[in-house]
Image 1 (cartoon, rainbow, N blue to C red):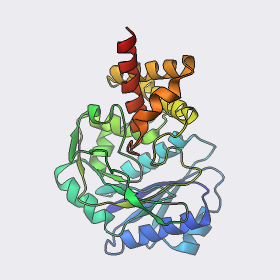
Image 2: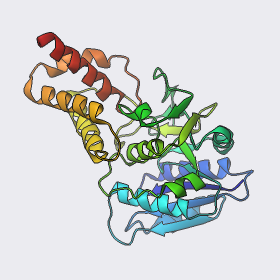
Image 3: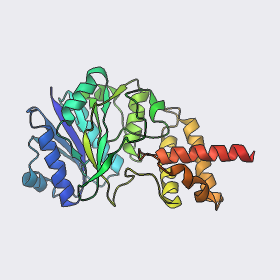
Image 4: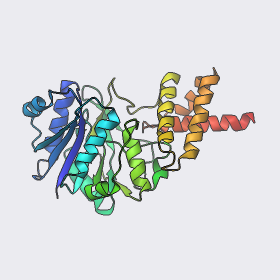
Length: 301
């Protein structure tokens, strides 16, 4: 069984980078045919030196962006390199996270009966200390998924906790738009809409780091400003999928949420209660707030 561990590499804190390479080395220790595929951001000239310093424990194939690109553009390079590889299984790993030692086996076991595998993640802080919780806690993540409806309102399939059969990725022949944001949500929505099936792994596959530069993190919005920003991201995602996948209901719900936030000064006092004990799965807070606004509108009318 040949594995390709795939990442998008960009400048990160030294401790994060060291952790990443440690995770790759330990996860692949009994898998001699594993390679690391890294799409390297333009200008990140230190990457080769970091590979020499930390050692990935496996051959490293780099695909350097020849010019500045968006986050989605860099991940498209990663996906293209993965699809063109000779791996049987492509395992995604975020450059600021750390694969757990059993990640490859867990993904392979799930992929015995699926095209996509996805696993929980153990939450850690910026210093790498455990936060005594997991990413999926309280979110009722299903054992199996099929069809894009599973992630229409929220997303639990990221570039740090998933794997895919390389042949299925290659057959999909997707070209991710440069402005796809979040890129992982776009990719897995498209793969599921194409008929691929997903299965959850039996245990967590990675350590997920929460730090100041995280785009989303693993906690619900704590201010109206953050909620508004996440709603705008979700709305952009839904609109990008227009004419490809029917997410019109989710799109309209988020449009109503954004409108409500922008015009009603009481928005946070009305919405913050529904975010108490909200799981940290990506955009779960936006989905809950959208449903709350729908109830508010129903009451008004």
